[in-house]
Image (cartoon, rainbow, N blue to C red; front, side):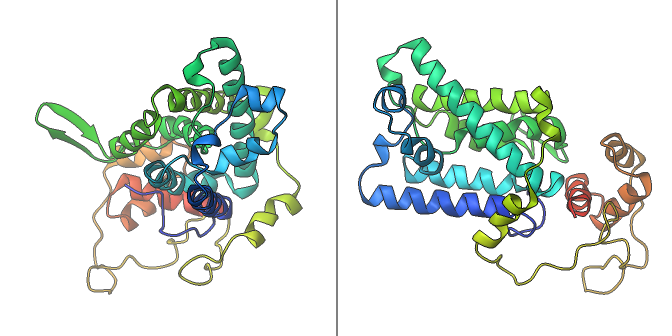
Length: 289
């Protein structure tokens, strides 16, 4: 299971965020200050160290947290491709601001010495993204290990669980606040899902981040028209397939129920060899242009 085509094409916000997280984590890790970067009610409200509001969003407390966090951020780039970088930047800002406020309120309310400083890192954004991941990304493969049933989404959930429990209560609170922030966004509180930033602000990230690996992005196709529609489906040896397998009707119905056009859904499944998850990514990629 993946988050669409490899690389950061059409995902400049995600690319900037991942690069910033890596740089901040390494920088403060070298200085030995990683354990003092998490949100603290005392630091923000009483000492007015507002710079920690920014640093705590980007710098993870440890290398393992960075690895799991960067992997999840990279996977969740599929949502930026789905709704576009402008609206995704609104989602990022909303998730970070709301989850950070909720974390500070939780510290003040619980008054637990163990929670005097929470773990640092973009927990708010990562766990907000689990809300659309749960509702909008379909299961394409199911399998069993002994008596336990798993799906291709299980690996993402396991990575999230590892990150959520990495520092026990210090990471559990930021994760739960992120899930709550994502739920508020999905409920369209204050019509947040209709909000868009001025194009100048949204395009700033495209100029700020490094070029994507793999060269220049292809010319985007017309909106809602899948880019594979005008080219033949290729076989294993590079030539056009003489007879592509007809997609199952239930797979087409699943994509149609998600709001995609029936003909586009069928073509996506043909191109993806009836892999419904890959077909979904193709359709989302086409829709994002």
